Image (cartoon, rainbow, N blue to C red; front, top):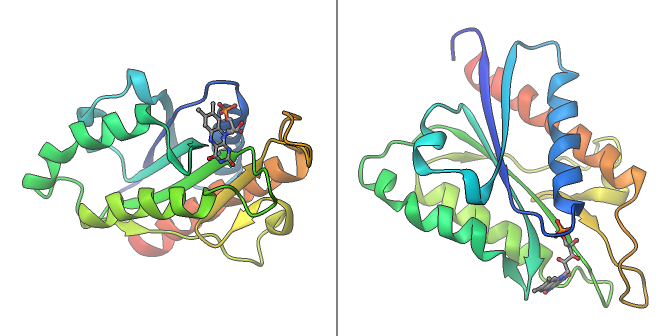
Length: 184
Ligand SMILES: Cc1cc2nc3c(=O)[nH]c(=O)nc-3n(C[C@H](O)[C@H](O)[C@H](O)COP(=O)(O)O)c2cc1C
């Protein structure tokens, strides 16, 4: 990867929680000393062509009934044409998810993240998890990627916490670090 690391963060967000995570991941990436070019796009505005120029592709979604929002799945299915050409092979992927988390077990967050990983791996991409030594991990980390719970114990929306956004920032910095080690 010569010089600049190109990053594309694609996400869907109905109520702004996943979008906050996207911006925190971007901020964490910008805090790195590396030369980066970072683009954020909502899934409905993204096309498969957008994926081609990125060295790191980061997908984020709210958990919807135990899996990703349809807006992310639509992009993923449209990008299947790239699979035929191995066009994404060797790129680095990362994932982040926000869920209401009613019940305390995450309400399908891990399955949603694993579903996003499966898509990256189908394309022959590499996938970066989230090391437990990272700042904020205890509040906003899962080994699959960054996670933030936006619901209260009563199942009501309360928004995601600062410590979860700290974790998202660490995850962004981690993705750049991994890319540097792999391709730098
Ligand atoms: C249609 C729908 C289905 C949802 N299903 C789940 C679910 O299965 N598990 C969960 O933890 N949260 C679920 N939620 C809650 C959202 O994942 C949660 O509020 C999330 O933080 C919203 O992110 P956003 O603000 O980026 O839209 C659901 C929300 C909606 C609108």
